[in-house]
Each structure stands twice: as structure tokens, then as C-alpha cells.
Length: 454
Ligand SMILES: *Cc1c(COP(=O)(O)O)cnc(C)c1O
Image 1 (cartoon, rainbow, N blue to C red):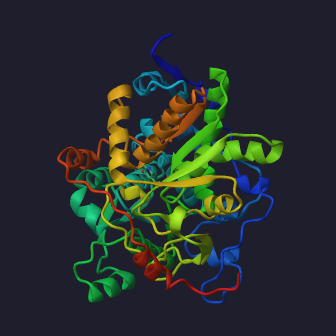
Image 2 (cartoon, protein in one colour; image 1 turned 180 degrees about the vertical axis):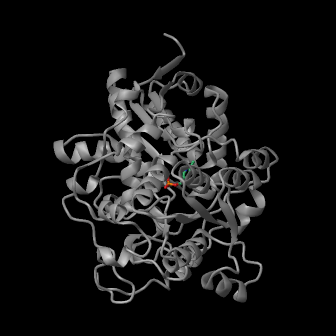
Image 3 (spheres, helix red, strand yellow; image 1 turned 135 degrees about the vertical axis):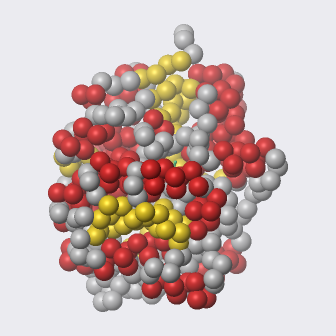
């Protein structure tokens, strides 16, 4: 058998619908709450920051939502993305397991993020919006939205977390190439930013702060809207093209997964990858084990309670029920910028709470060791975020070596690491360390959780 096995679908197999997990849940998702009244948020509560079609998707319980032709047409540039069988990694691990990975690094931004950026830009365009405002951590989402904005003739303003702005000039350069304006956050352009700078002029920023700035600006300008790159239902919905394609590709391979693995920052690549499989399981009974992997330095799913919380520092967003470390959580500076958010997608949190998925937290050094091993076997350097999924897939494969079981392990390789090489360089230089977020810090961050009726 050849070592390079790639399952490709024709362009005509780009999904025509996104899959909405809400349709198959036994319980409807707990509603977002208006922060001022504590009552369930209505469509009107979102109208200042999201266009109508996006609000409808956010609140929808319909199983299938049609992908507009304009969006599918742009998807064609990199979709369907390939599914690979990791034969050389299997041999390296000396495992009887069959390992597959879905590769989202083939998109122009190098990750899954454009799957939602293109859809969001399209819906804003047809709603008459002129400017999109967003935040970005490591720059993956910002570069995706900058590209999508350009495709649809929209202006794009990005608040970039200060530490990444200084340390990741290449991602900033990409955003600027696409014509976006990039502002380091906290900035003095917003109330939220100025409030943070007054208390801490040297603040290196956080996603929670950058979200506050972007939401504030979008809400104050009539022709500007806000875009979020993860967490919300509509973002996970757009990402389900990943799992829908993977289902077809595994059919081509004549295989069925025993375990699915994805990394979780806000939950969008994970949700997009696993929800189509989980939906089939919820409708029909059996299905794979599903494992969400997060860093020990930001242990949202494994240590954060499932509770109502704000999405941002300034408490401008509706309250959503999710696993959270508290909106004031300041993650340590570990090298997976995309996994540093204090909260988790409400849908991912809900299916963890109902026992349909498992969550695991891993150490940074193990994560990089696995990523390097994967790169040497498969020739793709994964994004540090993706290495969390790689590490767990490797662990599962090694468990198969122990037990002798030939399980099928499928993971989502959500992006390449070409703009994260400093992290690898630091790893080789022995500069990275493991960081377990201390329980006392977590307790402190959680003490500020808003009290709402359950
Ligand atoms: C943004 C990002 C993540 C984290 O976001 P999710 O919504 O959890 O997917 C993970 N990996 C990569 C490569 C990213 O760009």
C-alpha cells in the first residue's frame, strides 16, 4: 500500500447545507440573556451588532441551513479540503490504529477560520453593511475576515491583542495586505480600551478586552457590524462543512471512526468537525467517542463551571451559559494564541454537560513534542493549537499499541504553523515550560461570575 493516501472529493461535493446540531439536541440550548434585564435576549438585542440573517442563524433550530451560492463559490478555492491517512505516523508510532486527519491548513489563511469569515462577510454585505469590526488574538481570524471583507468590498477594522500585535507582525502584515486597519488592543480609541489603559498602561491585552473594543465600535456606528470568529452558534454552524466532508471521505475510505479528536479554543473547529457525527449519533444511537482537547494553561472545559457569563471584559455582550474561567481571566502567555479565550462555545459546553463528549487538558511540552513528531512523519508543520489534537490522537494510537486494538482515530488538523515558527524555535531552545493554571487563580477569576437565576 502507498504511504500517501489522500481522500479527495470533487468540487460538486462541497456541502450544500450547513448542519445545525440544535435540531437534534434533547434540550433546547439555554437562551442568551440580556445583560441589563437578565431576561432571555431577543433578536433586537443583537440588532446593533449583527445583521438579520446572522441573528436568525444564531437562534435557528432548523437542521439544515442552505449555503448561499456566493459562499460555496468562494469555498471552491480550497474546499473540499483533503482527508489524509497518516500512514507514516502510524508506522512511527508502531500502532495497529488507523489514523486520519482532515486538513484545514489548505485555506488561504492557513486554517479553518475562512469557512465562517466568508459566510459572515456575505450576510453583512447583503444586509447593506459597510464596515466589519472584529478582534483577533494570534491573527488567524483577523486575516480570514480581512480577506473575506475584501472579497465582498467591505472595510475591515481589527483590534489585535497587544502581545500578538508586537510579536506576530507577519499576521498583521497579511491583514494590512488585504486592506484591513489593525489596531493594537487595548487602544485609546474606545471607552473599554481607555478604561483598561488607565488601570494598566502596559496591559498586553486579551481576547476579552479586544472583543469589548470591537463590540463598542460596531454598536456605535450604524453602518458597521461586529463579527466573531468562534464561540457562537452561527460560527460553529458555518464550520460544519469540515465534519460533513469528513463523513463522505471516510465513506470513500471504507472506514468509520471509533474516536474523533479536535482542539478547543472557542470551540468552532471542534464543533464544526464533530457535530455532524454527533448529530447522526443523537438521531440513530451509536457513534464514535468524541474528545475535546485544551491547554492546561487555559482549562475552560476541564476546570471552568458551566454557568452564565459575559463574553468580554467590559460586560457589553449578552450573558451566555458556557464553561468559563470568568471574563476577567488573564491567560498565561503560552504558545497557542487561538486557545486563550476564557469561555467556550455554548453548544460545546452543553454537549459536554450532557455527557456526549469528553474533555482533556494537555501540557504545552507534550503538545509540541507531538507536533514535531507529526511534522517529521507527515511533512506538515501544524499550528500550535492543532498540536493539542495531534497529541491526543498520538496518545490514543499509543493506547491501541498497548491493547492491540486497531481503532480508527480521526482528528482535525485545523491549521498549519507557518506563522508560528517562533513557538517551535522557542521549543527547540528549551524556552517553553508547562503551565498549570493554579486553582487559586481560577477561583479568583470565577468569584466575579454574574449571579443569574439558573
Ligand atoms: C482560532 C484557531 C483555533 C481556536 O479556535 P476554535 O474556535 O476553538 O477553533 C484553533 N486552531 C487554529 C489554527 C485557529 O486559527
